[in-house]
Amino acid sequence: MSSNGTGYDLSASQFSPDGRVFQIEYATKAVAKSGTVIGLRGKDCVVLAVEKIICSKLYEDDAGGRLFTIERNIGMAIAGLLADGNFIADIARQEAANYRQQYEHTIPLEQLCERVSGYMHAYTLYSAVRPFGLTVIFGSWDEMQGPQLYKIEPSGSFYGYFCCASGKAKQQAKTEMDKLRFNMKAEELIKSAGEIIYKIHDELKDKDFRFEMGVVGKETNGQHCINPSVYTEMARNAGDAASKEEDSDNEIN
Image (cartoon, rainbow, N blue to C red; front, side, top):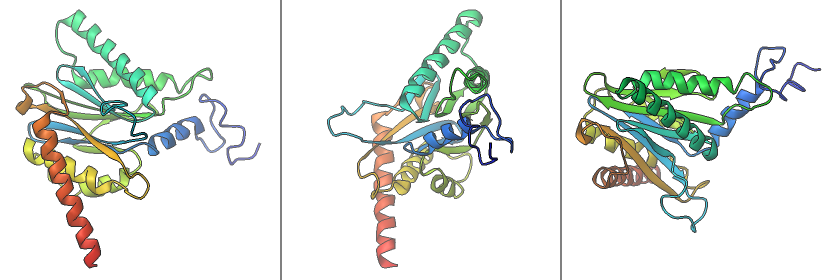
């Protein structure tokens, strides 16, 4: 077999001669074709924002959502295969429920990430299964730990972040995030989320998209809310304004 990977991509449990696991790389490519998802962590709030590409005008507005509530104070956003995301959301809810039943307390986000990432990593170890074509972003807030933001990769590795992104415009989103400052307040964080998603949307490739958002923090009394009307409208208005300003700048140049 040649060293370019021929024959080494049939199983997730096999390394290529140069130490690569191609099935995990393919899963990462599946994530890269998805609509962009970002997570922003502020002073007392975490915002998860999604660029949901509208594949058909016949779908209902809430069809194919990429935001989930796992626990009262824990939200989850996914980039990648939607079916895989629904499955992992169920696993995360089971883990959160098991912890609550055993300890009578909400599961700490880091422990939830450890359990879910371990589950995702197990699917990279055996030839009978395939890795999840999925990146998972968790956000939470509580009085003791404050805002927390974690991202799990298809390989099962996870890290804590101040800001993170996944999907087709991941790099552009990171460029916009580099301009932000940490410890922003909720309103500023929500507007920034809208501006980033609207700026990075590629109208030539994907004409129609729906902005969706999950918010958890002091402003929501520690409860994860999906598409709260006031905050979502605020983010969409900020995104529209930023997008129009960018278009006018491009026309002048």
